[in-house]
Each structure stands twice: as structure tokens, then as C-alpha cells.
Length: 126
Image 1 (cartoon, one colour):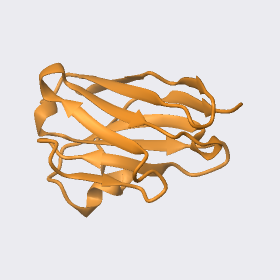
Image 2: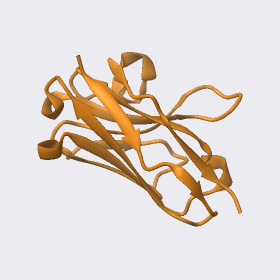
Image 3: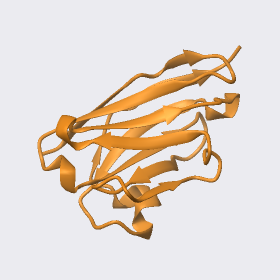
């Protein structure tokens, strides 16, 4: 069983940066597609970014493209989400997820992910 634990959330001013981490244990991390999703109050969970096992294929939601970067360190079994130029509408609970499926269009679909973390709160406010 894979366990995912997010960290790095917090309160940041608009225009600021945060780096989220997702530490994985169990399973075979270097075979999973890793994804980040977020859910704001009153809204559905939405895709943010995903990365294939080797780190050479990434996908981003249009709303974060150019501001967020997903990465991973397979030796440390950890995935990251670097968030720059944060805006108030980035405020949400951020979840990392792991998918035991080959890279493809399903990387942006929450229902295709097999394992989820508990989430970390990101609040962008002055």
C-alpha cells in the first residue's frame, strides 16, 4: 500500500512562492505517475499538474502553466510542486496522488489515480 504525505503549505502573499512536497512510502515510487490536484471551498477537485515516472513528460492545467513546476526525486521517493507568482484564486487544499498506469491523457483525471495524500492548505492573501 502506498502512503502519500504532503507538506509545505501555508499562508503567502499574492506574488509569493511556495514549494509543496509529497513524500511517498510503500509501493514502487519510480513506476508511478505523480499528480497534484487542488480543491477550493465549494468547488470540485481540479487537476493542477502531473509528471511521468522518469520526469520527462509533464502536464499542467492552463491556469498554472508558466507559474507552477512539478518535479520528482525518485531516489527520495518525493514529488514536488514549485508554485510561483501565486494568486488569491490559487487558494485551495492541494493533494498529491499516484497513478499506477502508463502516462497518457488519464494523467489529468482524478478518478484514474490509485493513491491520495491527505492534503495541505495553501492560502494566498494579503
